[in-house]
Length: 136
Image (cartoon, rainbow, N blue to C red; front, top):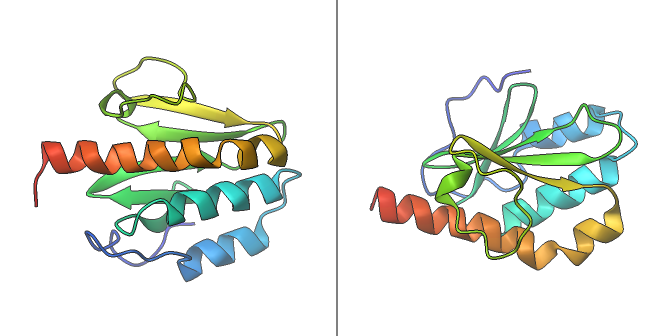
């Protein structure tokens, strides 16, 4: 399910992209509430973040693809941060030390809610890293 639009516009918040809404309505997953909460937190973390559907999943974008969900897992929700090594993680949420991707896992809604500030901080740190690497 690829969005027929081009990549999200740089610097424009397309919070609640209609394609994302459509994806979420059709999603059958016992962790749908957790996925929706993570989506809201991510989109609200910064006005520069936009959303697209790529790789059959919601993706978040700022200058490059920022993060992707794995909506197929039924036991936990994985938020995959692309080029995760660029993110300064002071939250302790990110796993792995790969330069290509780092992940954060969430097993229930209470944990997502408890980590709301940390998730927002990761997204804002991504924005800072992109601005530092590629100033506008």
